Length: 115
Image (cartoon, rainbow, N blue to C red):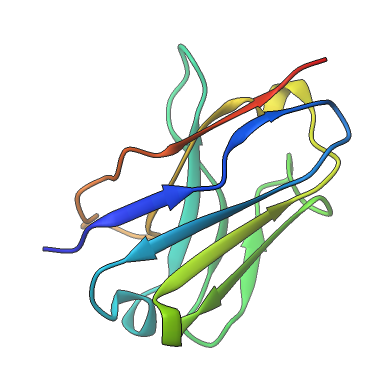
């Protein structure tokens, strides 16, 4: 079973940047479109960015122009570079396959944007 380990979150001021990493066991990134998701308190989990096996990326309107997804298949890792962070970006961030069936969700990494 694939396991995801997300890291890189933290507390950052509005306008700041963070780089999230998602490491996975196995070579899932080579075979599937992968995505970053986030879940804010009291809200449903939403996809914010995804990257295909041919390295084409797509973003939610709320993060377009500020976030960049990338992957390193040799390291079995997917990244999310987040710039110009806003308080509304505060959430727990997860990675997983873009389309169902999903793998087991990891614990995620908390991102808090606050002054």
